[in-house]
Structures are given as structure tokens and as C-alpha cells.
Length: 248
Image (cartoon, rainbow, N blue to C red; front, side, top):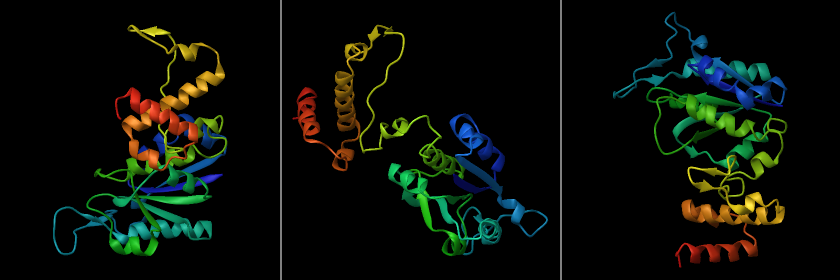
């Protein structure tokens, strides 16, 4: 079982979101466990203050090290070990599918949700093992990024999804984008489902899906092809696609 602890100022919002649908069922069945912890519970003042003005001046407030550290220390003490700790911050490494794979191999980790102008650097130096971002932009807090990371990791845990193929054939697993999908009806707004998908010929369907996966990656995210594990036939298909799309 994988356990994720999320340190946040909004535990109810985060907990409710991660208790729904697939992740909710995964928790009910004991494959994953997600616990949210209110950082304000670890303050030492009546106002439950978690932030203060930055030294050196400037706009905004900074999250104090003390309540963050007290919360983190309690989690590690209860686990009787230092838990791998991740701070969600726009300054971190951009999270990718390989990070999700890596983190899914852990038995437990902590996600820290920053807020305001940032977190006291001393807490980061003392407690944080890595910093992650979900993109080159800034949000009002770390809750959305933390939920995104938790979702991406938890769905890789055996038993959470119906079958391993549910994620091994998806976008980014092998550095390719996934092929297009269709469902009923066969014709919608004058647009029809490709004939090959209605043929029942599994080998041809598999070939079509691979070709369309390569096409979509080439047209939308060509840089991914440099990291993808391509077979000789894939390279032949890519050459054909380039000619079809007038890219050569």
C-alpha cells in the first residue's frame, strides 16, 4: 500500500477531492491511503498564525518554518523514520510521468503545499528532499499541484486501476501521445468513426493506433520522439506520416 501525507491549509478541500471516483475506491480497497494534515494545528499562538512578513521587505507574506516543521516532525515521529518530503513550488523541477513512476515505488511520501509568497527557506533546507512544479506558471497555493501529483502517482499503484494496460498505453508512458478514441454513435454531426475500428481486425486496429500515436506525437509534441523507444517499423511509419503531412 502507498500512503501519501499532504500538509495543507485546506485539508477538507483536498481530502474530499482525492476521496472521489477511482482514488476513492482505491482507498476503500486498501491499495492507497491519502491523509491530509492541517498546518494550522501545529502553530504555537492563539491566532493559529502560519505566516509573517518577509525579512528584507517586499510584498506578501511567507509561511513560517515552525508550524511546517512541527507538522512534518509529527508525521516522521509517528512513522518512526524520516519520510521522503516534496515541496510543491513553481521553482521546482517540472513533474513528469517518470516522476510518477518513481514515486509510485515508494511506500510513503509527504507533499507540502506552499502558500503566499513562499516558504521559509530554513524549513526547505531542513526537511524537504525535492521540489516539484506542475508547470512554468504560478498558482495561489500548492493544493492543486499536490492533488495532481497524488492522482498521477496513485493511479499507477497495482489494483487502483482495472488493469496495467490502463496506464501503460496512455500518453507519456513511453514518451508518445495516445491515439484518438471514439465511442457510439458511429456517426455524429456528420463525422464518422474510422472504418478500421469497426472492422474487428485486431492486428489492423493495433497498427492503426500505433500509427496515429506516432502521428499525434509528431504533430503536437515532436520533442518527445527524441526520448521515445522507437522500433524500426516506427521510423518507417514516421517517414510515411511526414510525407502525408507535407513535413518533408
